[in-house]
Length: 203
Image (cartoon, rainbow, N blue to C red; front, side):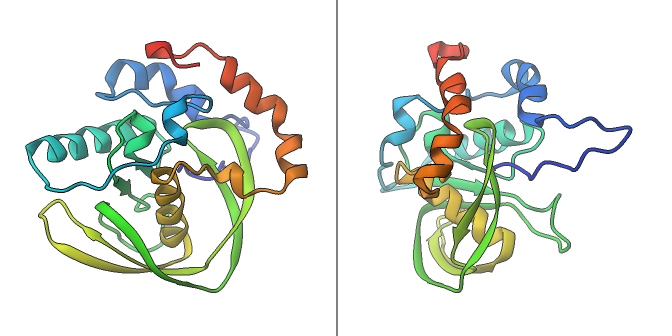
């Protein structure tokens, strides 16, 4: 998931940070993002049976990759082509409170309540944002990088970002939660992303 676009000012033209940061991302990030149209984004990730050095290295590389985008607040393993149930969320730069990055293996939503609509964007679908309806509060269970079972009660942006990334692990994109009409209005942009040449042969 990505940060919401900042409103343009006289000194700050409207632009999508993902597009601006992509050259830097290609050079510095240890993992390559996958973009809309890549089949891996539609596959369901597999549970992690044991957290080994391989999984810990994946966590570190994903964190670096997310930060390298310049505007990412969440990243799922499927977005870097790895079919493991692992996600990262860090909303510290956009939240009023202090947050530590959330890094969870095998995350599952135990309960959800309420309803909220807010704008979402996705690192794998640059230049596309839309209002998405999701539960306002969630309780999520998973395993942290210390191999401890943890339970997180989240609301607001944290709840939204966690749900967005869990969707990724199930092969679901935020645009799937839009009405048919809204999807149709975005069809042109989605087609452009699908046809764009990407590093590693992704289209």
